[in-house]
Structure formats: C-alpha cells, structure tokens
Amino acid sequence: MKKTIAAFLGLCCTVSVYAQNTGKLNVPAKPEQVISRHIYGHFAEHLGRSIYGGFYVGEDNTAIPNTNGVRNDVVDALKKLKIPNLRWPGGCFADTYHWKDGIGPKSERPTMVNTWWGGVTENNSFGTHDFLNMCELLDTEPYLAGNMGSGAVQELADWVQYVNFGGESPMSKLRQKNGREKPWAVKFWGIGNEAWGCGGNMTAEYYANEYRKYATFVSDWTNTGNLFRIASGANSADYNWTEVLMKNVPKNLIEGVALHHYSVIEWDKKGPSTTFSEQQYFTTMKRALFMEELIQKHSAIMDKYDPEKKIALVVDEWGGWYEVEPGTNPGFLYQQNTMRDAMIAGATLNIFNNHSDRVRMANLAQAINVLQSVILTEGDKMLLTPTYHVMEMYNVHQDAAWLPLTVKTEDYTLGSEKLPAVSGSASKDKNGLTHVSLVNIDANKAQEITIDIDGAKYKNVSGRILSSKKVQDFNSFDSPNSITPKAFKDAKLKGDKLTVKLPAFSVVVLELK
Ligand code: AHR
Image 1 (spheres, helix red, strand yellow):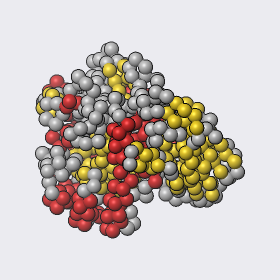
Image 2 (tube, rainbow, N blue to C red):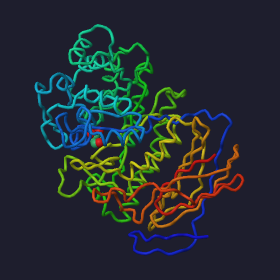
Image 3 (tube, rainbow, N blue to C red):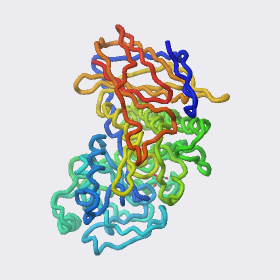
Image 4 (spheres, helix red, strand yellow):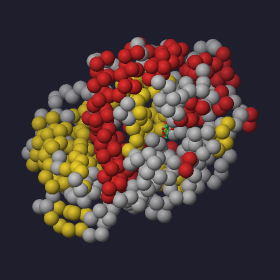
C-alpha cells in the first residue's frame, strides 16, 4: 500500500500508507429520486466583467468571434458543460434594474449607474432580448430575477407578460415591435433578491407579505401551469427567514425558496484567491462543508410546512469568495480559481446530489469573471477554471436517479480542528450507467476508500480525476491547460467491492458498468 503525503506547499513528498475509509453504495432495482439537472445552474449578473467582456462583446466587435454579440468561445464551453439554467440580471443589481430600459433600439436605451458594483455606467446594451436569445443559443433555461426592491408590482407583471404571452396584449405587441414574434416562455422567476439586505433590508414578515402580493400578479401567461416562482431566501443560517416564509406564504403562490451561502473566511478578511495558507484553505473548506448543516436545518423547517416536498430549496448563490485580484476594481469581484475551488465545487455538488429530494435547483456564483467562475476572459482569450472541470465531470449526474452512497471517512486535521476528508455521491443515468463522484479535501493525505456495493453487479470501472501538485495551482492565460481532467486508473472492482485511491485534494468521477 502506498500513501502520498504532499506537503501543503508542494515542497516535498513522502511515500507511505493511504488513510483508510469505507463506504456503502446501495443500488435499488428502481431508484426513484432524481437529481434535477437544475442543481447545476449558473449565474450571470451585471457585475464587473461578467456580462460586458465575459458573455457579451457587442454585435460590432470584429476582433472576438461572436453571434449577435455573444462570444462563440463562451457558448461552446458552456454548451459542453450542459448548463441547465442561467440566472440574470442579478444579484443585488436585479433590485435596481428596470427591464424596460433594456429593450428597443440600443441607441435609444437610457443609461443608469450600477450603484452596487463599481459605480460604472450601465448602457443597457445587453437587455431582455439579448439575454433570452443568448439562453436559446446556450440551450439553457433562463431564470429571471425580478425587481421587488426598487420596482413595482406592475413592472414585474408587465415583464412576465412581455416575455411569456403569445396572445394579443400591450406587452406582447411591444415585444413583437421589438423584433420577437414568439414568446420565450420563461419558467423560473425570482421575486426579489436578498430582500434581507441589498434587496431592501426587509424583515422576513414584511417580505412575506410583499411576496404574496407580487406572486399573485406574476401570472402564468403561458397557460401551461409551468411558472416557477422563487422567493428570496435566507442568508446562510438565518433559519427564522425560512420559517416565516414557509408559515406565511400560501403554497399555491410559491414553488421555490432560495438560500444564499458563500464560502468566505471572514467578510472583512477574505484572504487571497491564490496565495492562501493551509489555515485559510481549511477555513474555506469548513465554510463550504457547512452547506450540509444549512440544508439539513432549512429542509427540516420546510418539512414541517411542506411534508410532501412540493416546494424546492433553491441555493441560487453559492461558491468561494476571496479578495479581488491585485490591481483590479474592488467592485468587480474578479478572482482567480484554484484547486481549492475545485474542492468547494466537488464537495458542495455531492451535498446537493445527496439532498436532491429538497434541493432541486442551485446557481454557482458566478459564471464568468466574477467570484467562483467556470470561465475567465481577458480580451480575446478565454480559459476554463478547475471549477469548470468539476462541473463538467459531474454533469453525468444531471437528471440521473440518485443512489444512496454513505461514506465513513477519515478526518482532515489541522491543529486541533478536523473536517471529514472524503465525500461522495452517486447516480444511475438513463442508459443504465452508474456514476460515483468522490472528493478528498485533505490538503496533505491521500485517502483510500473501499465501497461495498449492494444491489448490482458491475464488471467494469473507469474514470477521470482532477488533481494538481499544489492546492494553490490554477489555470492562467499563459498556461490555460495546466489543470484538466485526466484518465484515472486507481479504481479497482473485485466482486462487490470497489477500492479507490484518492490523492490529496482531488476529485474523481467513476463510471461503473
Ligand atoms: O454574487 C455577488 C452578490 O452576492 C450578489 O449580487 C448578491 O446577491 C450577493 O450578496
């Protein structure tokens, strides 16, 4: 047996014994719980270089290949990721956004100041048509966040009518005049964002009342009964917020309750994105794994009022949040993305998969050039981050049947503190293939796990791994492919036992047939 102890800064390596873990994979004949593909959703806010420079470079741009102003390289990369939904236009920006400013001839659109993010002038050249047409290009479902904070009920009701109504109405006529005959039939609607903070500093009780009014007028103009209204949810462990919403909002008015949780060390001491210490890494992972407790506790409250689990928990903002890259605008939230982010992504997606009975939608914050991005751009250059690769490896779980996988894990210890080192999740897809994703967050120790399989006989295992020499490693514009998934050979099947050797800070996704 062999164990690799990679010193945290990659300065030395010793060969010794793998730490031992065990697991149980249960494969029922007819697994029923589905891992909604919408757990793998993304987020695009008018923030920094997310929209302008990230997704959109303008129709007149001849230097960067684009389709109606949307970067072709980004479209290709996101299509490979199979992004199921995209949230827009915010975030905090959403509660300052007046959608009518972003329709009609671009030369006539009014400007506004983006007060939340850098105080820059927003020229509204990327508006409703641009976003919804881009979603068609990406083959993804739009998730529109409505303005409750500084908007009006009529304004949001009009937006729904504008994008969703196929008959004759003032808003559908306006849409047609602006060049779009057929409605887009948008299903996902957020009613405000972070109403407890940037969305209006409301109390839970006040928001619940306002929500009832807004949700009433966000009518189903598609006549499909398909509308999915998402209430602005709790800030991390604010359980009272969920309690008040669940108690005060009638069930016929709500389909989803949101939750926001960022893996931030401390809000006033976030630490650097690449040159972090092991203590900073450990604390980030502690915050990321706190998602498990958050989901358990918010779900328990939801279970009280909605035992049939009709209402989804929608984690529509999650991810790592660090200091911005030196020399960049502090209001633009631009950060690099290392193997630490790959660990956050893998461990968090395992948590979501394992709670897919209640967590049926989530949005990583954010897709491009903001916080924990899957894509970074610089002029005409584009790179895929370690987080991208984890999302791509995990997309085998989208809409697959969840399989219960329990892991008895060793601890990752630092000083007197400890965290579970290994986590996993599993599913069976429509073609009968089983996928097991495993993450070892331990910065120093490799881990071996032996999983007992119950209910299925597999003959073959193959897989891919994402790993690197140092947990601080990242893909740069000079070296965009330093970290990419590789074929994985350290998984062995013997009868009903699967044994996997996971290097320190690695993500592995296996396919069993
Ligand atoms: O994702 C960045 C910001 O974080 C969002 O605008 C806001 O909703 C949250 O506080």
